[in-house]
Length: 177
Length: 137
Image 1 (cartoon, rainbow over the protein chains, first blue to last red):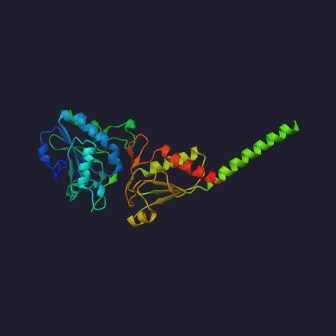
Image 2: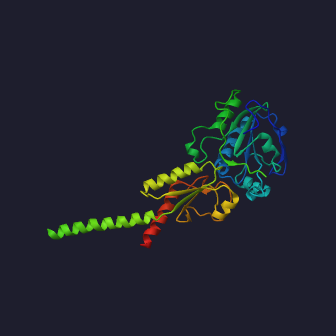
């Protein structure tokens, strides 16, 4: 279960990214919203949602929104989630957001993240406004009925509470050491 | 007149014999459904499998196996959840199988990746096994 409740403040991060740079939450102060998405390479749920995540960043970057994907998986058991493989994936899928490596798994534990993908959306003041799924259909993008993250972003950008503040994340479990 | 009725009876007998052979071969289908509890797509996949079997009029039992440990996964050669085996054959054999407790990625007909096999993928796998059985004669 997540350690953050809706209304809690952000847990800052400071992690290496696939672009060779260090990324911290402080880098994104001034953004209208920051969505921390626990993710990875190998999980088919992430892979099913990946293009939609890229599209969300493309659609909302002009509105001051920043998505940040973080991989916390144990790469000794899941070598496809290694840092070099993360770099490959980011290149292959043209990630337009930072993809960070939480090697110690400290951030995932601090957040109480359990699944990939799992979204924690913070508003401009660093307050958690939405937690859960990207949308309601991992299998078929054309069959999505509830665009949870998009709806939450629209609400946050308008200074309103999301219509749905929390959903149960669906995906692979985070692979703990 | 007598010849006409004799021919008609023979046609029905032959059709029934073909149907009996098909039903017998279909009943020889061994369907095994393997899953890992932590991967959420197994329930929907099992429903898809049941739907396909119903549509194909196949009354085979499904052996449902819950894979709980890495050792069991390796022993069962479990490439991820969910996996459907028909007569021991994976409906979508992975090119480089790695056995363990994980969620499986299926590449669908349109190139997308999904955590569960499509209905058409399941149907192809089942039909291939039925056809193979029928050819055995």
